[in-house]
Length: 297
Length: 294
Image 1: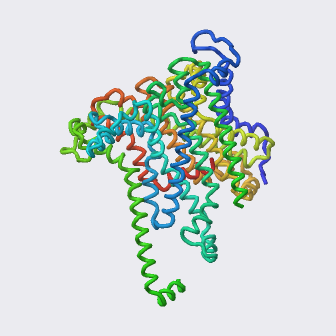
Image 2 (image 1 turned 30 degrees about the vertical axis):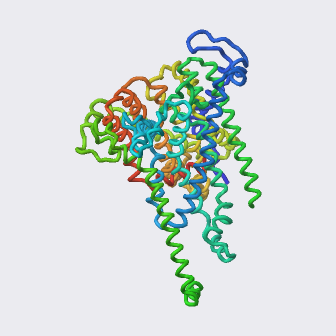
Image 3 (image 1 turned 135 degrees about the horizontal axis):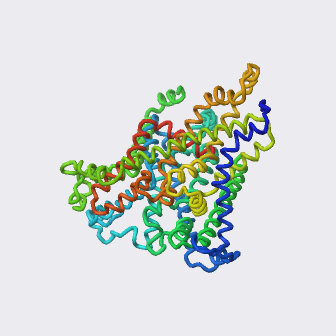
C-alpha cells in the first residue's frame, strides 16, 4: 500500500518534532510523577526518598483520600445514571418527531462550548443567597418555600450535588448530540425492514435503535466516565474543593495537596493514582462493551 | 401509504382516533423539548438580563423582571475595570499559535505514519493512542517543575507547549484516519512526475486534507480557548492571562458589583458564542467527530 520509500532522515524530520514534544510533555511528566511520588518534598528544599510511603499513606491512612475518590465515582455515577439515559431518550425523540433538527440540537449543545470558568461563575451567581441576587433562592422565596433555601455551595452536605447539577446541565447537550448523530447514522433500510416485520414506532426503537446505538453509547459512557475522573476545573472554579474538602474529588485533592499544601511528593502519588485509574477505567469499559457488542450481534 | 389509505376508507373512525393520539403525543413531546430548551438556555438568558440590571434590581429578588433601564454602564465598568481586551488578545494569540502548530506537526506525523514505508509507524500510533487516555491534570505538577527549570513559567510558551502536546493525539488520529483513504495512485503519478516527498505533502496531501484539518481546528479551538486550569496554574502576571482565567480573576476582584460581574461573564462567553452562531453545524459535527474517533 504505502508507496513512499524514504530515508530514515526524512521520516525523522516528519515525525520527530511532534513525537518529541508529545513524549516530553505528556509521557515524561507521568513518569516523573511516579518517581516524585516516592519523595518527601515540598518543591523547594531537599527531597528525601521515602519509597512507597506516600502511596501507602494515601491508600491506607488518609481520611480525605477515599472520600474524594468516592465523590469522583459519584460524579460518574450520576452522569451515567441520569445524564446518559436522558440524552438517549431525547435523541430518540428528536430523531422521531423533529424534521428540522438543527436548531434544537445546537441550542441544547450551546452550554458545552462555554468555558468552565464562565459556567462555574454563572452557576455560582445562580446559587448565591437571595440577598446577593441568587436566582434559585429568589425563586424559592417567591413561591413561599423559604425553608428550602440553602447556601448551596457552602453547606458541606449539598455542595457536591449542587456541582453535579452543573456538570449534568453543561454536558447533557454533548451526549444528546453524540447519540443523535449515532441514531442518524443507522441506515434507514433497517427501519424499513423492521417495519415489514411489524416493528414500527416504539417497538422499532426498542429492537432496532437501542441495540444499534450500543457502540455510540459506549463513547458517551467513556467520555462521561473519563470526564468525571478528570472533572475538577468546575470544582476548582466553584468551590476549590471546599468547604473543608467536602467537594474534593481525586483531581482537586491532588491539586490542593500539590499547589496549596506544597506536598509535592504526596500530590504526585495521587496524580499517579489518577493516571492508573484512568487507564484501567478505559480498558474496563471497552472490555465490558465488547462483551455487550458480542451479545447483540 | 396505500395501505393506510385503504384502511382509512374502511375504518375512518379508527384512523381519526389514531391521528388524534399521535398529535396528543406530539404535543407532550414538544412540550418536553420546550422545557429542556428552557433549562439549557434560561441560565444564559438570565445572565444576560442580570448583566443589564442595577445592583438594587438584582438584589430586590424579582429575578424574573426586566431591568427598568438597560444598564450599559455595567459593560463600561467591565471593560474599564478588567483588562478584557488584553485577555481576549492573549486567548486569541495562544489559541492561534497552538492551532497552527498542531496542524503542522500532526499533519507531518500523520503523513509519515500513513504513507511512508517504515517499521515503527504502528508503534508511534499506539503511543499517541495511549496518550489520549492520560489525564492532563496528572502532568500539572511535573510540567510546572520542568517549566520552572526552563525559565518559561509565566509565559505564553508555558501554555502553548502543553496545549500542543495534549491536542496532538486526537489530531494525529483524525488526520491519519483521513490520509489513509487518499488513493496512492496520486502519489505514484506525482513520483513519476519527479515530485519530492515534501512537495507531495504540501501540494497534494495537505490540500485534500482540508476537511479533517477543519475538524482538528474546531476541536483545538474549543478546548484551548476554554482551558482554565493550566492557565490558572502557570500564569501569574495580569498582562498574560487568557480569557477564562481573566474572567475568574475579575469576578474575585469585583465581588460586590454584581451587574459588572454579569457583564464580564457575558463578555467572556461572547467570542465563542458568536463563533458558534456562525459555525454551529461545523462545530457540532467537529465535536462529534472528535468524540467518536477519540
